[in-house]
Length: 417
Image 1 (spheres, rainbow, N blue to C red):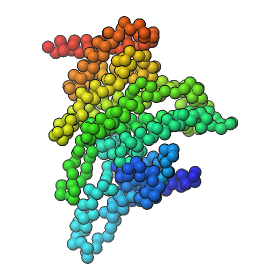
Image 2: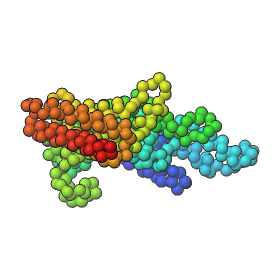
Image 3: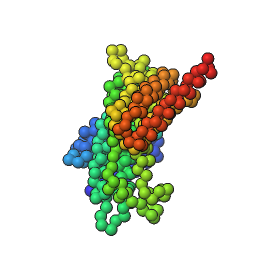
């Protein structure tokens, strides 16, 4: 199994780099031609590979427990690869075409076929907020990234449950537990980045006018898909105890005191669990409330097909607020992890009121409504004697932050008057 794994990786790597030497660019949309189920079907993956092209950035294809293992890496030339090489290198023959231009146009006209889908660096933008298409990503597989990352997160949970026993044997360094824990946690980070692209997302198409089966350049992600993506992010990142770990596991996250390339950070010998969890659980908030993303959500309201209930900024703000402040609404104690999420939320929302933000005015109005709503609830909750000292202090701190932001906004409005 190890030899097969290594061999498939080398084939995938070499094929990708040889593709560059032949003039091929990255195709970050190619890995979306198969369903997630097909990725685990070895008959399918051996026949047509994991992707439409070797030019994508593709992760290892691991199957969940009790499911068959397909290919570990993409080892076959995909349909996109054959097509683009045909366009670049096919010799012109007068018997078949009257001119080379006619031949090239005939080849290029195939571009609307699903297996030839294409999106390169300036479509993906490294998975940043500038990328709009949920199917154009680095390091993913399948036609449904939400389904794909649901699997990956479940596998990460299996790894967490198996640590530390699964990671080390007698005589081995405990740093291996830390490395496996960090890599499993990394699946959460990757999943947040990609699934959040559905929010305010657009499916993109590169065909030209007159091509067979042509489509419009942009198709807004359907509202229900955006809602499904938001539910995924809320469930796995924002709700109470989305990520919790036993003290036994946390105390086994050792470090290799010799630099070995796997864990070179030396700021702390122990593992900074709060910092790590905060980075994971708050990452969707930074994406969702990015000014560019909010602008697309607002624009997409106007682009949604008539008769369909659009996914709106109001729905987004309300859904996230209710998830982040779930404990406050239910009068229960927030965990230390959740307090970090609430603080990050407060920082993002209040910043919309306190600075000359690039956020659209509808979003600023909704942020102000969130601040006033939470301020009022926090005021009523200030007499709750069931709260522990740290929870009471935390809520008082949040009340002061929301009140200050609202007062600052009022002062600015008076100055403008």
